[in-house]
Image 1 (cartoon, rainbow, N blue to C red):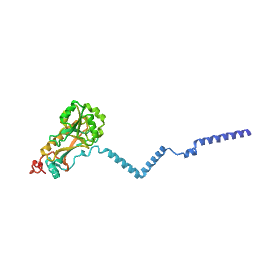
Image 2 (cartoon, one colour; image 1 turned 120 degrees about the horizontal axis):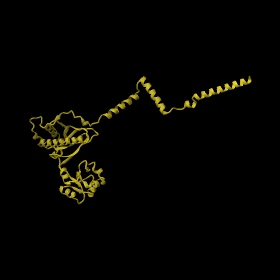
Image 3 (tube, rainbow, N blue to C red; image 1 turned 30 degrees about the horizontal axis):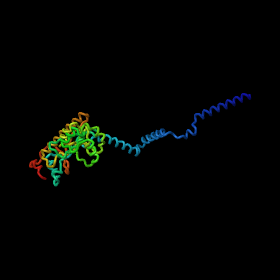
Image 4 (cartoon, rainbow, N blue to C red; image 1 turned 90 degrees about the vertical axis):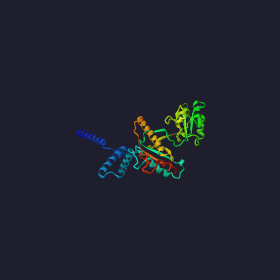
Length: 325
């Protein structure tokens, strides 16, 4: 009997021990209950709580400000793909003679040789698109003070051609040294390079000096050539132009030009710029369009041209626009 009771007590102790071990295995310890959660878990819990609060009370002021900022940024990225000149101005348009009449009035009192007409051709184009650049010889040159220097081998035939064509400076190492020592007082305003000197020009490191002046020879600007004489003949009386900020701007005539002279210059420039646009479109596939022509003067405002020639005042003879102011 005593042995049976001892066996029953042992079984009871074993049962209680196994029950306690099972409870301890399933119950979280104090250290694990108090351990901090990971940042990802906390962020997920915070987002869940924010969404729950937003559903009940609506977005917070901080969330509204963030949404507005995102919408503003997205709108800013989607616009301004074209320059501001992509849309023609809504101002009144004038015939050439009427525009000249008002611009001459704005230049009264100035020396005639210091006042010039200027033209701006506005082009619809993408900001990241290709630009047009070229050189043009106008029927009636605006100024004829072109002074050309030629980079060529010493004693070469190209040097002889440059001297005979009237270059103000020529040579290779001697011309490089002249450019470096007189960077702010160069005796020339145009520079061309013979193809044989292209490598030495790159080694000379003159881009910092000639680049800002627009005189660095390059194949892109067609100022590196093997025919010095023909290039110099082309440059004398020719003007370079380049599309900048969606427009081509350049002097188009002296204030004493007749309406016919100014008209011929404007027509010639417009025709060449249209040809440049066609070539760029064929080469790149990106569209460009000439949308407006604006005529201004040194001190006068800009007048959008209508394409007409004669003045609206029937009593005004175009020849009167060339008399002394």
